[in-house]
Amino acid sequence: MILNLKNTFAQIGDVTLFAKRFFKEVFIPPYEAKEFLKQCYIIGYKSLPLVAITGFIMGLVLTLQSRPTLVKFGAESWLPGMVALSLIREIAPVITALICAGKISSGIGAELGSMKVTEQIDAMEVSAINPYNYLVVTRILACTLMVPLLVFFADAVGILGGYVGINIHGDVNFYRFLTQIIQSLGFLDLFPATIKTFFFGFFIGMIGCYKGFNAANGTESVGKAANSAVVTASLTIFIIDMVAVQITDLFF
Amino acid sequence: MIKEKEHTEPKSEDTNQGPIIEIIDLHKTFGEDNTILKGVNLTVNKGEDLVILGRSGSGKSVTIKCIVGLIEPDQGEIKVFGENILNLSKEELNEMRVKIGFLFQSGALYDSMSVRENLSFTLRAHKRDLSEEEVESEVIEALESVGLGDAIDKMPSELSGGMRKRIGLARTLILKPEIILYDEPTTGLDTITSREISELILDIKNKQKTASIIITHDMACAKMTADRIMVLKDGVIHAEGTYEELEKDEDEWVRSFFE
Image (cartoon, rainbow over all chains, first blue to last red; front, top):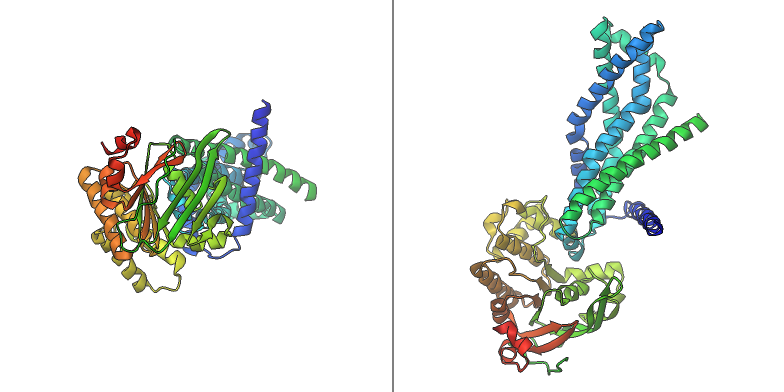
């Protein structure tokens, strides 16, 4: 028990040092622009179909599930605003981040873990190439930038899903639907939700990289790194979300 | 018992210019009590091929990984070109690493890159001012030096074990190192491919005048390439000599490698 606690604290210390190294090395040349763009393509563009499907289903299901209750209170006209607010403030950021944790964090964990096991990271090191700069900095930066964009995309597709959901039981003009959404949204609905997605992206990338970069020797550790990356990143997303909501509540 | 033997004169002509690598009293323990190296002393002269033999887990790979700074020893000195690498800053160590090539047991090619990218990535990292044409020309030259000019567009997953090692060697050669460390270069290969790799090691040494440390269990490779052989046992150099000398060594354990 005490040993487990000690290991947990030691690991938190390791992760902190790993993150500290990122903030140091991100400003040190060489800047690996090509690899960064490649990672943006893999993390962002290649995740679009998955985010689109889940975003659409989120919007559709949320609308269909909320409608009967609102109808009971004669508040059916609030449906577009309510769906948009729920999606933008909470559901799209968290669900998209969880999907990214599953797809991206595990992918990075497995990729870097496999590179570690097959001595590719050592090969960079002995060729006097900084593997942290090339592999870690680029991936964390790409995640930090791409996850918020994916969340915006999920917001848009989710709202589209909501529009389809509303039109299953009624006939609402798209222009009117959008107007209702815009009227119900304020700056404070968008700003904190957007800020937290940068943190989601940063931690998804950082945890994937940390787990992969520190994988033990042996092929078994590759699977462990990927699995551990998903679990830790998912848990971290919920913790960040809780903290973000508390902070938003406190200041706004 | 550690046998003290006088250093034998190596075969090659360029080997009388003093040690290019000098390891003094190297110790390394993993964990609390897993002591691997208990005071390794060795020297490699310019243009010399030194083969290190020993049983699995005897610390051969640990020794050469200490030379390139992949593993930090607990005690001892590692002098490369007269400088103790343990006292170098990160930048100085990286400058030193450019002069030391390292061939990993598996080749350690970057899986996500083609053969061309594997080589050009390494080259560009150090020579950012080279034009596309110059990079391409150096990549082709390095690949042709290992006889695999036509594999330039292949991915590592399309290569055989022997080809991966050759490409790994080409990637090492592209930086024109003065020392090459080979970690079991023929392990896992058939007899014919092993002989081809051994010939390649010899060819590189003769053409590029590199000094090498070769870790191997393959006695045919050792016979072909070694100017001098050191046998590692229980964390120290147990015996040293030429292939012919050690083949007739009075120690049965040493002779067992050659049977």
